[in-house]
Length: 153
Image 1 (cartoon, one colour):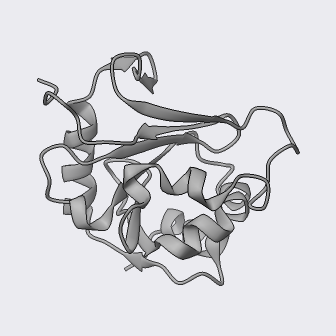
Image 2 (cartoon, one colour):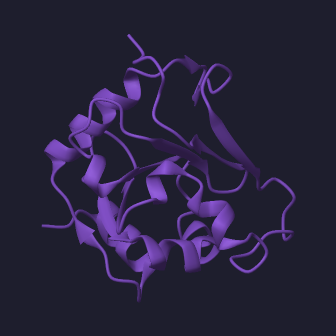
Image 3 (tube, helix red, strand yellow):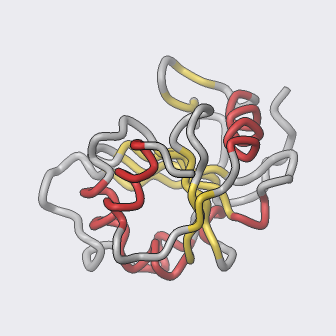
């Protein structure tokens, strides 16, 4: 059953098909994200291999302005499906990676009301160190490009 929040999310990415996952998936992903080092409200990427795309220059970026290959360097976008997590208290949604890569700016515009999204490859949902991408839809995309060399305690 969709909550009002999930209805807003599904409507924001419509007509792209999404699958609503379980609250248990959100709890697990939140636990994995909490294992990463944080600095304030953001993941501390300073000691992790990662890539950054700065989105803070309003209007400069669109789904056509960033090469798909650049987005596909993020480990979370290596598989067939990507999971978008919004909080530990709302079920995440999964969608085809191709749909996400082709339409990311439309998705971000539709989800502007969210302060943060976390992306994970669907096939890494049960992994101990899933490659995560942290997104502030109006400011940045930051994420893992490789497996972590040493698991974060």
